[in-house]
Length: 395
Image (cartoon, rainbow, N blue to C red):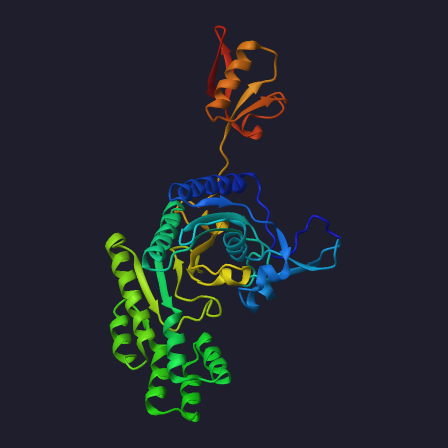
């Protein structure tokens, strides 16, 4: 048996990658701190109901279950930190009513299966959540912070994919779909199966207006100009649907003003997170990455499960993905300075000063005749010249 093998999808980081991850972690946490988002650290395990109660069955399927040996209760290893942050906001923090609460987090999560074949099951999740404010300003702030996160990571050619679950929910309510009809329609929407949707509508007993609404929704995706088309085609879908479309238009107007180079795509039939999102939903894509690099949306009311319902909006990403977005994504180790392992007061002071300046100083435990400075992780050495210690090239 090969005892050194890791389970499929479980990652570890060797020094060069670990250094890059830690550097990015510090930069992002400093960014969030500057925006007023306070860092919290959540537990690795919680009782299962706390982890999955507000996020739907999909998260429950992604969660590893274990038994608490002290009381026999079922616990879960966190597969998503977002519900933990919502619990902390609603139950652990004493906030004045109406006061926004900005929180950020970073930590490893564990999932039963990867979202893509051969992918990681142990991403390093990073994100920011804003609780206690409902409206365009907080949604815009969080999206803007996400875009700044991608900028820090060196992302290029960012595409923002936007949707609003209020469109789909409003349309379903207006038509009055039964639970069974809704389940069938949502399943076909999730699979983007237009022929199936067309056949189902023809076989069902919908009136002409309802059939038209159900038929046009799956095709309402594309550039920002699709919102004008949506307003025309869904003008009989009710005030809630039209309000959601108008909300998207206002948000896009602000984004285009501040980020004129940002590419924006609209998908009004977006199904991701339908069970818990209550407003806008979005994903970000970047050059060099075949999958989304960040995602987010509004999920008002999640705190109700923990005793204090509050508006909420936020985004999340994977730190491992972020360090791969730069044009120069090759991870390289910083080289150090090799110093003799001798007892010399001047040398000790020089080493102390260099380390305080952020330099890596490695003691020479093996003679250079046996192991070069390069092999010891250094490209420079300390040499004594005229009683003073100086840095010279290892070459």
